[in-house]
Length: 425
Image (cartoon, rainbow, N blue to C red; front, side):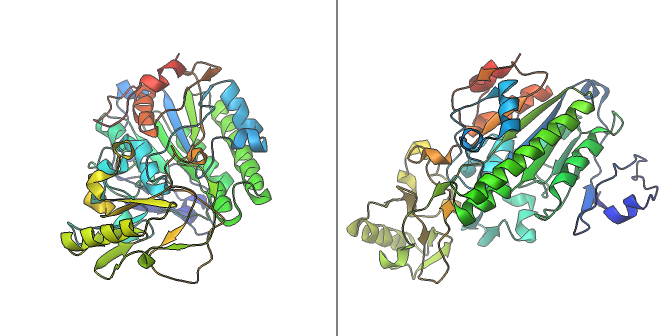
């Protein structure tokens, strides 16, 4: 069955709208763009799943692991004090970029295994480009591998909802979230929280047990002004206040809710001007997407690789894809291109000369070389051992942890529960 679109305006006017199966729809808050809650034809929570606890998973895009201490994020610090945290941060998958890492968090798969290897890329097998900004591709489930947590829940008779998350608009592993929205970065920050609470106030059979929530504030400030700027501090304080508001409203429901607040990656101040790659090798026989290189032939790939090697630059290392170090998990998927360029510092790259101003802050780098890529992680709730401090862990491990909190059997993935087990009561 196709998804139904229920407009915010009609709901707020008090229209008595029900789904095809007769379930009342949670009243969503109004968006400046009059965004819509989209409800799919999911099933009710099974009686067994109605007894389970709830997980609200919040991403604060680009929220570096040390921001709570650096900028005094008091609400997040309190969640950490009374719950569990990784003080030295969690380790993003390579590349430490938004779409790959958000989808890693909800599948437990490294980007080369779930297929979203960058925000934009070319697929030599399909002969097509993927872009996170293109509705045609980001809503097409055939680009995505793995079983996202919302699909996992629905396969096991548990409802799920998403207030924004990369991949949540596509049908993946046969499912979309039971309720979700098309991405709208201008949707009021406080009203996003109101919708989470509206979902949790639904009757038990309809109430989602797994909910995602997303904010991009700190990522935008980091890119535009840098991670050490007053503008970044302002946005850290803003999202920190939002997390205090969310926690208070979750507590007021008196439901057993585990709240996870994390980030996809960190942020670092960039150094120098653009590094222009076509000055090192002839790339005229390549398709390119961002800094990913797709040769027309094996001979072209090898020739470009040799040219890069003949003009070494300490700011980056170039590999044939099969030779990329195994710890990066970036050497198997044709979508990664060949040859593959790995930055050795916080440098910025482009294929051809241009006039665009370099970003002040950026990410995407190897976390083992740049610890500024480490992301924040805090979890608080009835299933969490208070005061727990976890060692840094790979973000692929979050998947099994959330499945454990929800009482679900996880799908095959690249992570493990062991690093987060000490946080469990």
